[in-house]
Image 1 (cartoon, rainbow, N blue to C red):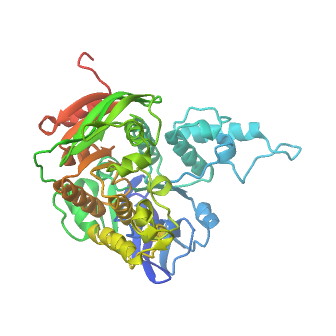
Image 2: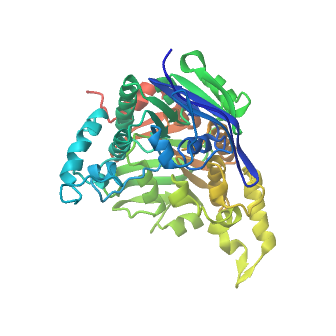
Image 3: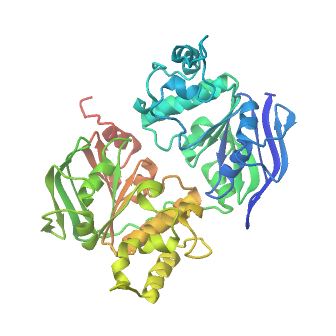
Length: 499
């Protein structure tokens, strides 16, 4: 039996009005990758924050290498060999790799001055351990996101970490960077580390994790071996019910062309792209990270300038695109990032939903509160936003409910063409199933939907047609009956027939 590095039992944590954890726990052994799953709001982050010393548990027991410990601060956690690599990396871009690794623990020379040379030399073995072949004196801001993650992990080794928490580590990585990360995780596993891998992606669990621990509503639901369970069993443990096939689509004959883009060029990421989308259909866009999908949609919406190309709405050429013009003419874009582009997190649900349609209930400085309430209630009810009231701040909502508010916000504009950029990114399977149902209902109502996603199975199961992109160009167009993972990946990687 491998050494037990961590055991958390019966952990309880209560915030004002909310019991976030109720007898939660997790166990990790040396040389084990433990997947950690649950719906948004299940308590995963809270439990890891207890382990990371961000805040103390109200009650419960924590054992590190068999000894009961009391973690009251981040320093306590680090001293016990725990390292938490957050989804939002905590690195200083204008400091070097070595300076970041030893930040707050700077090495000094005989004169008592900070020595960059000493730190650079000391950083090398930690960088080698994660397979990062870069100059320790390189500025972190010049590294890719994948390389920055490796710097974070290298930093944890400088703190003698034996338990590594990776929070949604692949959410912003390219396919190549994901492979590098997985290789590094397997290597660290062979070195005897215990790794907690927090993810919403089922495929990652079965590819990388030895076992999976599930939380639901703050409670420990069990730990299962990856090779002994199915995707449906994990979903059932997470949501308390069998979702069956949670990709919900009823395919109907599409109607008239709603939007047409011809020979769009914009910056370095969009090169001669053309497509059409019809009413009552989902047009999928798939490509690897950096393929130019989001940039193409922003150019179509007028958020980014087009260098050349033409856009037609309902068969009529658009003379000049701008976000306001496109919105007023029935086109809405639900952006990829809820935090930076989508919602004002410190404002209420109601404020966010009504923001694009203020003219609908404000006239000459008078606010029609009844009209405002109707817009808010319609959005919250139709999308089943789970919140006590519309006065709740968006920052207090789970990722899935934030995504519903973002959808409600743009559906309030009554669009005819809806562009969804990564609509299920960072949300759990239960919330995904609800989003897919919403998409299906909107298509049945006659909307034209453009679905941009980096999840192949999502695009395959939800779209009527699919467009593949690579390095700013459209490399393939497929009808639903032509879909195959091999063919889709070939086009997405830019592989031609002769290669």
